[in-house]
Length: 121
Image (tube, rainbow, N blue to C red):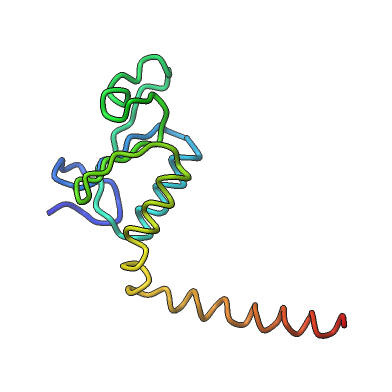
């Protein structure tokens, strides 16, 4: 079985992630794939937009990022859509594995904000 939470060399990872080196939209998706500890294969595409034929064949567009998720038979482009899809599809799994720490970290900030609001009244 391939590694989880990072790009794998194995082609048996259920998610294929088409991306461009140094693309901030792609990095946003990479961070979420890693956060959710999902197995994926990275496929770096041609920098020149007109040469991204592999992405065009897979997703019908030449833009990146694009993911192909064999778990759900979903092919999707656009980072905002991909992030929403990953959060909806795999977010509960990530929450179960330990976002309690993040929730606990947020709680003092909310209490602090409430105290600040009370002081302004």
